[in-house]
Amino acid sequence: MFKRSSYLVIILLLLIQFISCLPRSPSSDLVDVILPRTTTITPSVGENAVPSGHNSFEEAFHKGLINFQNFRLQQTNQIAKDVLADPSMYSIDSEAMQKELSVLRKYVTDSNEALKKVLPADQLGPYTRFFFAGDKDVVIQRFDRFNRSHASKTEPLTPEEQVTRDALKKRGVVEYDKEVDKRYKEYLHYLVDEFEIYVKTLSATEKEKDKDMKDMMAAWNAYTKNEGGMDKTAFGQRLFQINFKL
Image 1: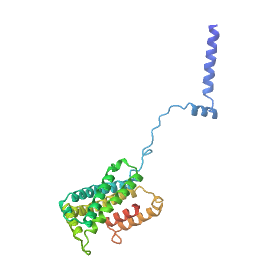
Image 2: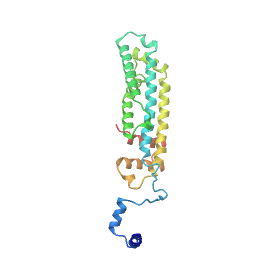
Image 3: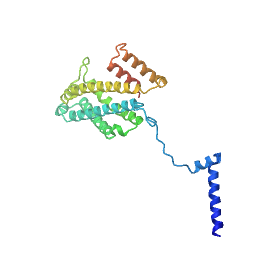
Image 4: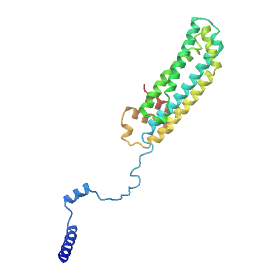
């Protein structure tokens, strides 16, 4: 009995060895699909690499814009609060003065609400960042219009408007305007630096993919060739105009 079993084992081993030498059939490939063999594959250099500059310009545009808008929102909110706390704003008892105060109070309320919605730029997706910047811009423009209406050099100010203008100047609105201009120029230059990195990642087809891209490339070519007075600030302004659309 033992010898018979031994012969069977030997025959079985020989049969397995013989089968392993036969050419592989499609059915054996199916086995590998169901029970895949473990294989270690070393990826080639750069196989999993993602171009670091690709799509980074859009992200940089929105992050920089939101940071700029956050600064403006915070500063104007504080200026409005400081003006409302200025005793001179209550020196005239008139309906017109009450209107001045009402506009400032509403701005404080609206800007406080907008400030509560501010989140760090790196926690937001590109489309969310765009709408955040747009919403804040709508609020900030109310302060800008109010400020400009009190800084006219051609239209005389009423006594109430003059009091408000003096309070605005006392509370730093002139310095704020200068800082906004400075930071806006820095932001435009930042856009140019980021676009210079971004454009190197684009294929010829990507540079022609839509009207906005064609417009940016036309401005880029003018900037790199120093044509038509297209300096760094002007090119940054053009990039901003193309990309910021509400």
